[in-house]
Length: 556
Image 1 (tube, rainbow, N blue to C red):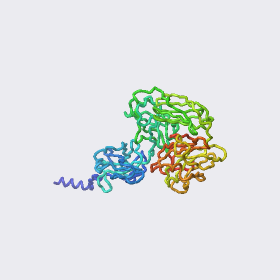
Image 2 (spheres, rainbow, N blue to C red):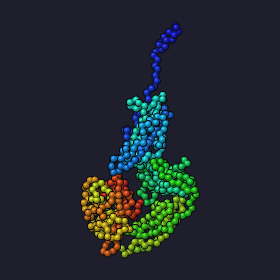
Image 3 (cartoon, rainbow, N blue to C red):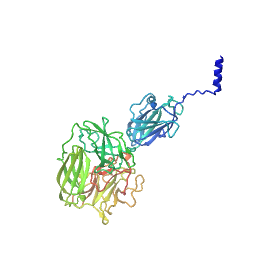
Image 4 (cartoon, rainbow, N blue to C red):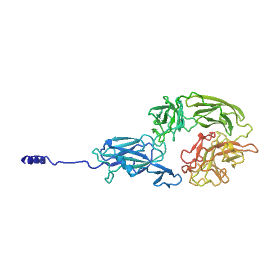
C-alpha cells in the first residue's frame, strides 16, 4: 500500500499528464476551384485542393466525371430532360447519384476521366497537405464536369464538411473551348477513322482549333494502342491552310503494322506558349498489314476554266498531297479521299485569255509514292468581255439584327494601283457559279472603287447604326440593291453567292463566287460572318468563319 502511495506522489510531482487523440477529421481549407460551379475552366486544368492538416497519401481518392448530354439548347436555355440544365448549348445531367458520390469513400468511381494525383505534405496556401489533380488528356470542351475528392488524415479520421459531417468534397466546372488548355491535335491526313494506312507512312498532317507556333524543332507524339509511341518531327505548314491551323510532320521511325495510332502531346506550343496535350476525343487511324508501293491514280483528273480561275478536279482514292502547276503559278492542297479541287487565278498565271497551256498535276500518297499528269487546258475565253477585277471577301448571312435587312456581301477592288474606276453591269445571285444562266440575281447600281478599296453590297433597308451587329468601318461605301440581297435574302444556314458580269447579249462572266462551304445557321454563329482572301479561287479551304467571332464589314 505504501508503495502505491509513493508511485502516486512521484507521478504528481512531475506535473500533469496529457492524454490526446486526433478525433477530428481534416477539412478542405482552400481550392483553385473557388465556387461550387466554376465556368470557363481550361480543357487541360491543374486543380489544387488544400487541406487543414496532414493527410495519408494512400487514402486519397479522386474522381473527375463528365456530365451526360441529354439534348441541345442552342436556341433556348430550356432543357426538356428531367434534372438537366443548359451548359454552352448542351442539355447536361448529373450522372452521379448521392450513393455514387458517397461510394468514393470506399473505392474508385467508374467512368471518370483518367487523372494524375500528386500529394504534397505541406501546402503553400494553408496549414496542411495539398493535393494536385491533372487530367491525363484534355477534357471535353464546353462540358460540365464534377470533381470529387476524399481523404483521411494520418490518424485515419475521414474528411468532414463545414458542419463536421463525414463527406466527399465536390466542385463542378464547365470547360472552355477546345485548345484552351494547350494545342489538341486532330488528324487531317490520314483522316480520323482511316484504315489500311500504309505502315511505310511518310507524312502525317494534324489540324488545330486555334493557331500554333510554327517551330521546326517542335515535336508531337503518335501514341499506339500497345503503349508504344512514334515522335512526329520537322513540322511544316499544310498547303492552303490558314497559317498555324495545320502542320505536316515526318515520323522519326516507322509505324507498326496492324496498329491503331492517335495524336498525343508534345513540345509543340500554341501562340500563348502552352504545350500540346492529348486531345479529349482522340482521332485515330489503323495501319495496314503491308506497305504501299503503288503510285496514286490520276486517270480521272480534269482541268477547266470558270470565271477568274482555272480549276483541276479529281476524285482521290486515298489521302494525297496535291500540286497544280501552270507556268510559274502553283496551288497545293492536302486532301482526300473523295472529290478534290485545286485552283489558280488566271491573273496569277499571266497568260492571255484563250491561251492553251499545259497544267501539271502532281500527287503524292501517304507512303511518299508520287505520280504526275500533264493536261492541256484553255485558259479563259478570249471572246468573253473583260470582267472587273473584284473579289469576295466577307459574307454575313445570319446577322443578329433584322433580316434580311442587315445582311451584307463585301467586295474588294483587287488592283494594286490605278485611278478610281466605275463598275457597271454587275449582278449578285444566290446560286453557285456553275448554275449561273444570266437571268437571276440583283443588278448592282454602278459604283466606283480605288485599288484595294472594300465596298458592302446591302439591301435598301440596311442600317449601319442598327447596333445589333458590328458597324461598317468609317468611310465604307454601301452599294444598295432593291428589297433584299439576291432572291429574298441569304439563308441563315448559308447559301452559294456569285457575282457575275454581263454586257449586251454576251454570256455571263463569273467575277467571283462562294459555293457555301460553312454552315452559319446555329445560334452561336449569329452575327458571325464568313471570310476569305479576296484573291483566292472558289475553294473550301479559302473560307473560314470570322476568327473574331463577329463580323468586320469594310475592314481588312
